[in-house]
Length: 184
Image (cartoon, rainbow, N blue to C red; front, side, top):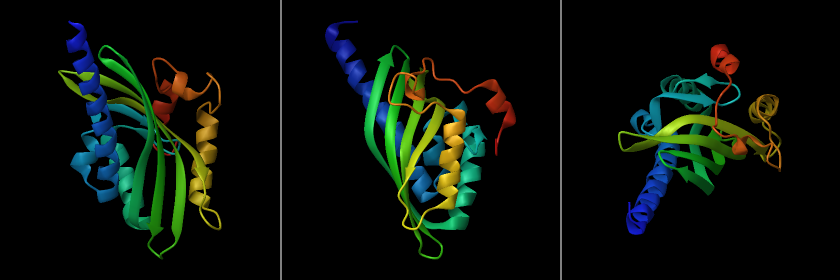
């Protein structure tokens, strides 16, 4: 592969990976199953502290939460770091999410999506995701967000040094967490 071809592949890969991140957040906000699931390989594993499982199980679980508790959600993608290595990429994408509850209460929280992407048959998608909730700035507090953040701190290393989960290569979810499944 020439230098130009390598550069084009790098740029194309980075754009396709970022597009996956954006399709996921749009799908969650619009409750659009196809859009959200298109960001993942079918056999992906998602670790969200209170949930561990497949993309389909994840969407069904959180779709019900959003439908029940929120009349509007707005997931925003912020800083995005992508380390490409052939057909594998490790990314760290900061997010902030604002939710309007069914009784017009407002919640604001954020953290990071730590992902391992794989290119399979020419298609980039998430193979492993660890969502790290790190902060909640909801006026008056948000017990649901606070309990989720506490759960994240139990299961992953959140640090301002290389012990942080975002440095784990390859990114994996421990088998005992996968076996524990939803509500783990």
